Image (cartoon, one colour):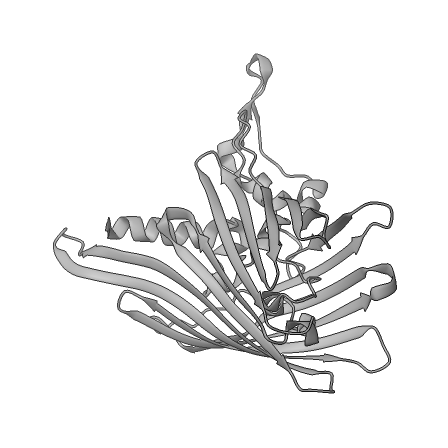
Length: 342
């Protein structure tokens, strides 16, 4: 149990950990990384394609026949004792290119002790949010392109405040099997609040992501490049806490991120070793997370992520470790059960 102050600290940490765009919209949990494979490779992938239903939550164009009769359950032990997770599965109509997808995302902030402004106890309360996603993916005949869309119903309960919303995702995915090359684009969280918390309508956390992934011909390595938050170019900001005194007392050197610094904040990179084997290793780096959560003159390894996948017959276990700062790291776990023919 925590004081109400702890709740708000934890909640605003969640929505502002990527500060420039984190606090400008509601339902921020929709943009959390619920897939351990994605988390280990630096961020949400829009190129993940085979037998992983969770991928349909980040790019609906990835919804395809290899996900049929696959069930994916993921869980993350997040910061400030917050827990969240996701479930997904899919079904393809036999002898067609039509695949339907079902997904659920939830986040539980825990139970809290409430107090009024005078310090009097108001009893316990909880806080949680969730979204139910229904999706559809379709392979365009005689082409390498796939398209898809999701519709999401969103529910948020924060103490006595309730909110409902609706959102949609659209995506396109190019799959060149001969080159083992995937190129994807996803536009997520297009929608609005149906009911507000306190009479003020807020925007949803729109996110536009472009990604490329390919397996090297001469080595068992699959590289991933994701360019995120294309809906907003300017992500960098001046942080007064990083201002430094110049040598010999000649004034203050103001923190002023460069053009290149801002450009890199859109980029996530990752590498998957032995991607087609029963055991594969993953390593990723999130430049934005590294830049915004780094500590001056201290090596914190912020932005680094790593993980692995272990396949045993029809079961695949995935794990990811994500570094935020010196005191904050998260672990994400996932189980994929494959009862399909792929």
